[in-house]
Image (cartoon, rainbow, N blue to C red; front, side, top):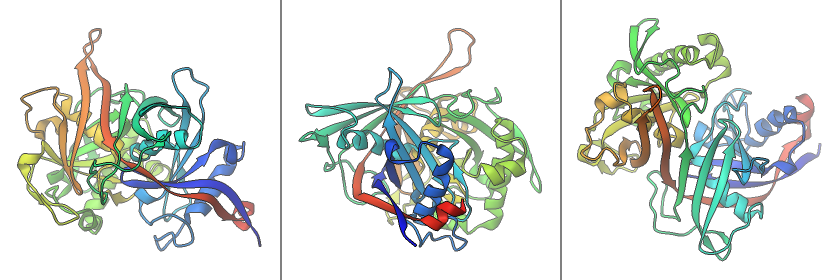
Length: 390
């Protein structure tokens, strides 16, 4: 049987990779998208490898981005992100991928969707998942997005041209509130553990944070080691699913596990500690302000998901949260938050303040640098039987 061919681009954005589609090349009826995305990436795969598609067997390599013109006056393009489960036939649209956000501006420029000249481009991106604006700033090379440069991104081999991503007013991206429950710390009843302290924060993407020691780890373990700790992963999923209910993302913990496996992210945090990166390099506690590991879609990330890192930094600035509790006090309150994570040190800039009206916490912006590269362009092939079966 013949296969259906769709124009597409394969790109790396930060520490993730995704198939990027131009909105005009997909069916007008969005109900038809899921079958295309699942087949293109090779999901569901009970073996967890996605060998019959372009996915890489882990959540950071099982992603889709759709980019099209924006109807908003404050944006140049609309960007929709889809997280495709590896072993299940689930496509999630409840969150954004910050890493892949770094590829959207360059994609728009290189595709001729946005015009730019001079040495630098600014592309204003409207993320339809979170209904938030992102400003993407990057260098141009002969009218195209620059690729080569000397910026080193932890977790990615080599160097590249930096992309500055500015997330404007990131609070409430998934739930409508920076602190969805109104509390800086909640107590979540977890079967087998009893009451567990957690901080529920929604900046760029909803996250639930627990102390690493609560989960039964130090926080310096590698992602593969944590993934292999079935008891730890079980505890984290119990916390995550119950936090999803408190945040209004799901009605029951079971629904959160079945239908929202990626949101909220669950983060384990600890004070700065010496550790070893995935590349075998030594990390010194003196080089960071806190230690963090993060899980989504059943995988511990090899490098923190960008939106998760932004949320971590914002949470570190909110007095009273668990993240603030373990973060090294800053001599300069405006300094970057340096997060010690599996692939190295990640610096995040953010502005958090108390509201002048009601005294609540407000996140004005959060910014980080990433690199990106177009890896392949052409057409992705999807078996017609997969589409008909849908």
